[in-house]
Image (cartoon, rainbow, N blue to C red; front, side, top):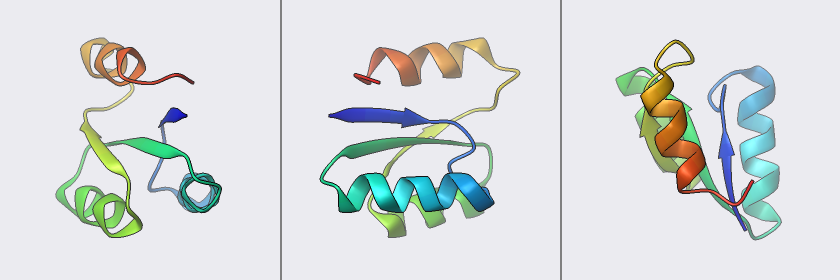
Length: 67
């Protein structure tokens, strides 16, 4: 399953991303920073650039995901 995660590089979000990947899911993580891109790629997640104030970035992330 492809899962879109907002807050994917935060304290809780990063743990959720790891658990989802370890469970065999594909993760799309939302991040607004270059450091966040690096963190998500190293974790094995796909990256969606943007933030919660940018509805287009949220729409793109959710359109590519099952959950």
